[in-house]
Length: 412
Length: 221
Image (cartoon, rainbow over all chains, first blue to last red; front, side, top):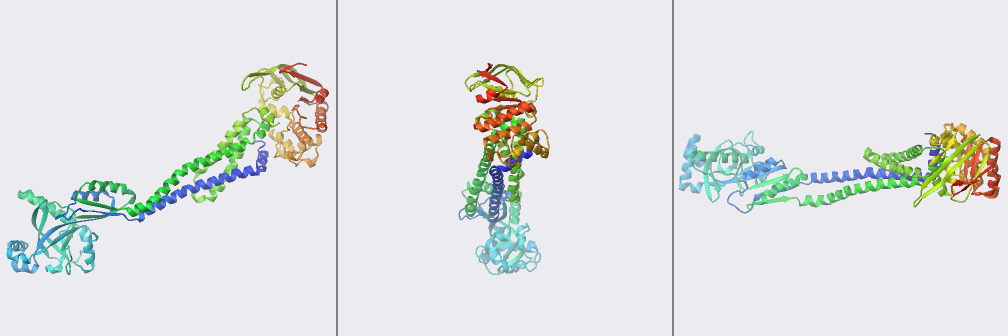
């Protein structure tokens, strides 16, 4: 463009205006590049807070009931929801057993399974043997961590070879019993299980393999077996009852479910799932999200403010850019009129002024982007550049569009 | 021989409240080597007529003819760049360009190299009586008369043969007015320029080769 060199000289001699454009674009760029990183950092802090706080909860039988009350269907639903990282469930049934010594006395040592079972049934029927019965509770757990009682005796348990704590996650018919019952590891123990269904009790005999024993006696816990195995027993018993022509159904309900929420950001979904269960009076549903709520609430509020303000600041900065450019260009209308008088076309003048403004803004944006290079965003820089340049364009077009003689006469 | 002709030139513009017939049927031929003064009361259409001659606008009716072609047929930007030069009362120099840069500017627009443009600018400045001590001064450092002389030097540097001047001595004292007037007169009579001056100054009008008197947009003598 002819005469551009001199236009540049004029622009550069107008130091204050040049500095104003360069500095304001640089500041605007730094701010607008920094601002999203501020939002991003806050968002990251929020994510970290969500990740670092553990939200747990439980579903428990509401009152002291004779039998577990959490429907097994609920257990399956929460297992399948995928919302939980740790999920512990427990159930139980009452049991009667006999010490091994007594059973051997009746059936003989190394007796067959059938003889053992016969001897067990005989002992059960014999009222004189009532005093020798071992009364207890068979708890079903899906994990060793599901029960404090198990954790307390963890170091004292003797395991059968190839078995360990993980066996509770399986579905084998095995059990952990007290040493005092006299059974060896690997023995099969006969048990009478008593299930409470509504107001009646249903009994059934079952045999399970002893894979672990512990010394002493622990309050409330007699024996433990895998929850899944207990569930299968219920299904098998129900099928056997049906085959025998009676209508009893062994429903495996759960006493407690403890959970840890996998992703705290899915807390709403967790709450929706739990909300369904809250309608059941028999159940007590609890979610320990108070700490999470108290921690994330101020961060979320901060984030919302930052995100809301971003658009406001962006529009404001764009508007300031537009008006700075507009006013600076408007202040040069006599200059443009003289250019016009000297034979420059309006298109040439507009292009020159825009080039000048664009280069100055580019310098400002480049400085800003350099300062805030870690958060560089081309789109933001482009918008700032555009707003400043459009402001100048608007002013130049308005000013070179009027009667040149009028402008020059106004000056007089 | 005429260099510029006004042929039945009319100009009507719509002001805020009314339609104004600013120029009414002016017919005139301007010749090279002559000094013309356009006089008349304020609002009689002098400056409007001058701006039509300068190609800043087109007549509503009639035409301004330069080199056998109407200004409507010319590229008017190019016409202002090459055919005419306009000098105003307030000088209209670029305040942030030095004296030599101001004079060189129109030459750069015509594609002359900067070094050559500056060389010519120095010559033209000397022609108007401004020596090398003025070259690197900014217009604000000059008196009104000196600034007007720079404007005349710029007009001369544009290589146009027609110089239009709108109240060129309006802001000047008598001494400076005399210098500027003499300069314009010399350019017309010695260098063959066609000088057309719009003025209120009767002294200038009296010394012009020809005076165009306007009243209500019409030429009366």
